[in-house]
Length: 305
Image (tube, rainbow, N blue to C red; front, side, top):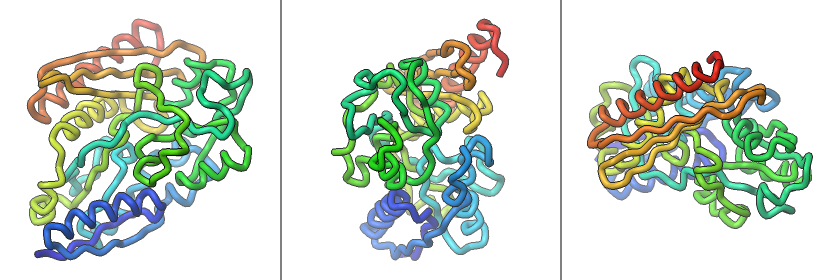
C-alpha cells in the first residue's frame, strides 16, 4: 500500500476524472488524496487559448506540483496535454477511451442542419470552427470559453443557438440528456486524444507507474499515440485547426486527419493512412505517415502552414 496525491484542476469535470482515478487506486489498497488547483487556462476566459499560450495553460501548475513533490500524479483530458511534455515528465498511463466524438447541444434545434441561416454557434476550438464552417458556411461561429458548466449556462441564457462540446465530458458528468445528437466522425473529425484520460508523472517514478499499470488500456494508448503524432509532426497547437482520429479493425489501425484554413478562405485538406499496429512505435510511425500525407496535400493545394 502506498499514499498518492493527485494534482487536478478544480472544474467539475476535472474533479470527476481525478476522483475516478482515485477510486480505482483505492480499490488496489492505496491511500489517495486530491490536490485541487486553478490553472492559468481556467483563469483567462476573455481570450482564445490560441492567443494566450495554448492548452499547456491547463497543465503547467499541475506539473509544478509534481516537480515540487506536492503531488505524485496528474490526471488530464488528453486533448489538453501538449504533444511534447517538458523534460523530466512522462505520460505514465492512458486509460480506456470514452466516446471521442463531438456533441451538438441546443435548447431549440435538434441538429446543426436544423439551424436557420445566420444562427449563432459557440465554440472556441479552431478545429471545430473550420469543420463547422465546412458543414454550414452560413453560420456565425462565436467564441465560447469556460468550463463545461459555464458553457452550458451561456447556452441556456440564450447567447447561442447551439454549442459543440466533447461528448465524453457530458457523459462523464451524467449530462448525456443535454446531447441533441452526436456528430459522426465523417462530419466532425475529433481532436487528437479526445475522450481519453492521460496520467502524467515525473520521470523516474517507477512506483507510480507500477501502481497505474492496471489502469492502462493498450488499444486506447495505441490509437491516441498515432493521433498525437500527427499533431506533433504538424506542430499542432491551439493555433492550428487540426483534427486526427484513429480506429482499429483487428490489428489494422486506420487514421484520418484534416487541416483547415483558420481564415476560412480554403477548403479542408484531408489525409488517410493505415497499417498493422502492434505497439506504440508502429502507432507513432503511422501517425507520422499521415502527417506527411497531410503536409504534401497542403503544399499541393498551394497553402503555407
